[in-house]
Image (cartoon, rainbow, N blue to C red):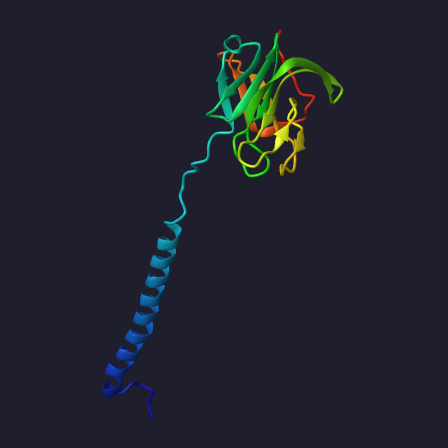
Length: 175
């Protein structure tokens, strides 16, 4: 006896192999296409706003307060000293309003003197903040953020890093 295949078994074996490998290849192709379709839902580009923003030349900022609506930021200037406070309410993210005080006040904030000219209030839910951003009343759970300021070496503009919060003792003093 020989182990040779009989000619009548050959078509059945070919059909069985075709179904086994053909269906496997089809399932694999559908899986790869499905993975590619799911991957297409995730963008390759980040549409987030940049965290460092050039604000302008320091001489363009008046003494006192300047509101920058695109950055939702208050920039304060006292002589050659600057600091930046967020205009985003810590409750639900509304933009707070600055309210001028009848007379400026001198305060010591985290060990450093600070001239306070404005208080802040949130028009959405009534949160109130002091001139240094400290929360006083309302549903706001924490004070307004202070952001790090630097001067751009290439063109001398003020640069704020909106991803880098600093303590309330931070001041940028220009030479």
